[in-house]
Image (cartoon, rainbow, N blue to C red; front, side):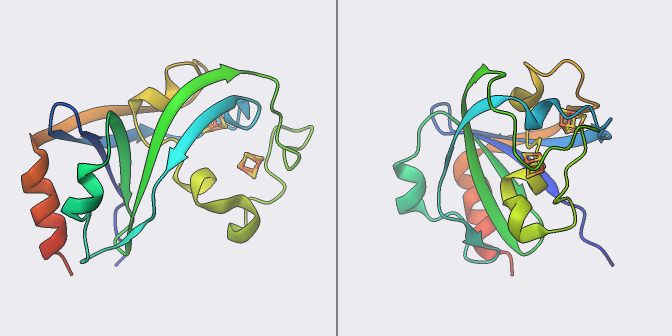
Length: 148
Ligand code: SF4
Ligand code: SF4
């Protein structure tokens, strides 16, 4: 059975984790492929090895964690810079010419959008996020450490 991807926002300052359900669908507007968005990433964690305490102790602010059942991928959206960053793979039809090529398209494109902050500056985006639960950061990390 296909694993339903889960989306979390880890607030390392407030020590709170919120889980979001991603609703809607891609309207193929192409705006996320035209936008210049600054991101930070950390090393991914294999599911079951979790987000280690040592690692998390160094993190600050809001991070989005995407759990695809095999891996936990962590992104921090720093800032929406503008529109002068059209991806070379974006066709005139606003579709990605590398959509089926996971090497060329990369994890960030596959995971996008990973949380509510991602779509704040993209009003045409067909996705939105609904909060479905929250808890203490340390508990979520412990749970991730126990998952196999
Ligand atoms: S690789 Fe495709 S999905 Fe990723 S930014 Fe470029 S056009 Fe968009
Ligand atoms: S901004 Fe949203 S709807 Fe538009 S192409 Fe990107 S993911 Fe799809």
